[in-house]
Length: 273
Image 1 (spheres, rainbow, N blue to C red):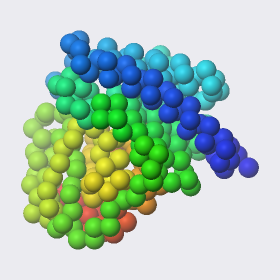
Image 2 (image 1 turned 180 degrees about the horizontal axis):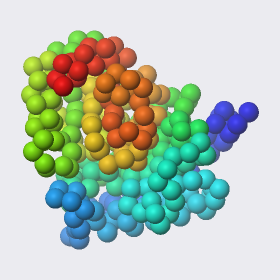
Image 3 (image 1 turned 60 degrees about the vertical axis):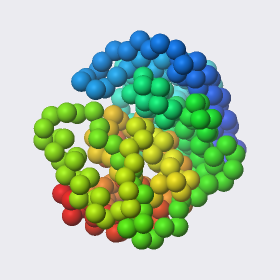
Image 4 (image 1 turned 90 degrees about the horizontal axis):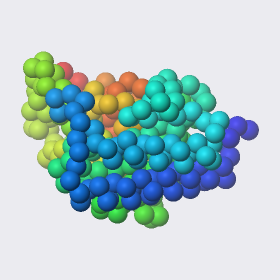
């Protein structure tokens, strides 16, 4: 049996990831209430000193425990590890998802730490240190919010569903038009729309039943979704490609829903294309 089948080692992976997330969360919480020093990656894509400090802290913590594991991170993949996902146990980390929220003092920010084994997201931790919510999931062992079991919603009517998406960071006309046209069309088919500014927290919203439908096309990378995908799956929700195909961790495309709405949601998404 490989390590991915060993419940006790998975529990240990989770405990180490939670420790790393909580340490990074302290740094984020401190920085959240201070003046931010911001760099621009693009027109609207921001990176702060806190992102970099948190990534270093998390990777050092994980490396100390698991020197043989691989690492993929948002800020410094080149410095810390690999950009390519292999079958090796690989930690996939977004040290601060929701950087724009962080810069503006809007409290939807989180640390996202996922572990993929054989390219399958297997352990997930998403921690919002401002609101004090710790989402965790381990493949085959359920999903939890602050230690209490969570499950996806039971809503079966698209018209009563709450949808979450993001506009992304690109501002070229064709991308913006495609994004807003999709949203305009979907608004007639669902109850309402939310944009919370963090893909990882959006997925956790599906997992705990606050949100019913989620999609995003063209986000930063696997670090945005690796942890959230495990948590949704373990909460009885579904994660898939917006086209209806299988979820691909490295495609920068994701959709998620409870177990009742997937087919109707995919139909609605394909009708917007």
